[in-house]
Length: 172
Image 1: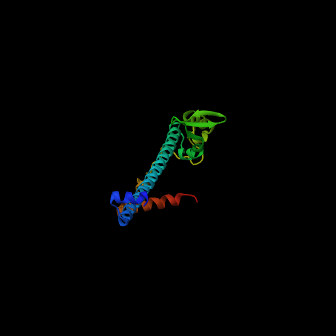
Image 2 (image 1 turned 60 degrees about the horizontal axis):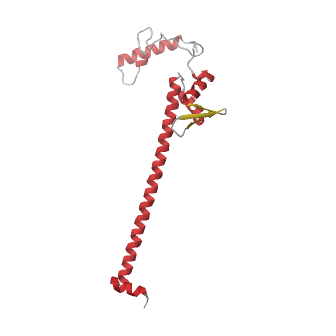
Image 3 (image 1 turned 45 degrees about the vertical axis):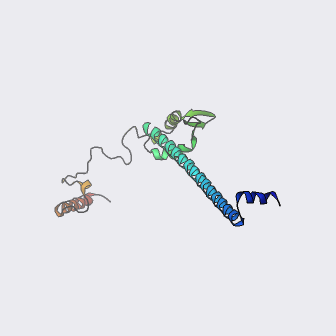
């Protein structure tokens, strides 16, 4: 008789009881492993969400910095500079360029100075310029900006007449 037999007698466990305890232990182990897997998934999801928040914050700060400097097409400028900007260990946004590290503000100041085409024109006018005194009203008093579906018959007829009048005087 081996020591295992005495342990069975002391505990009062038979073969059926041992199988039941073993099945319970296996089921408990599977539940524990499943919970550990879920915890790892939740932690990974949390890391991904944090990275997405950090990326959104980085892009927002770049866009805000460009807008503060008067850049008109900030979205286009963001796409140009975003790959140069990284987050430092202290959370500050930094740029490594030309062998030196600078802050986001310094970099954006330099970028805007080197790329004035992103700023609004200094002299109004030129190709495609419109008069700032012109409004949607025509000489007959019809507001072309107010033309919309469902307007009254009278207003619709006035608008059509005015559009026809304007088209008749236009050189094509």
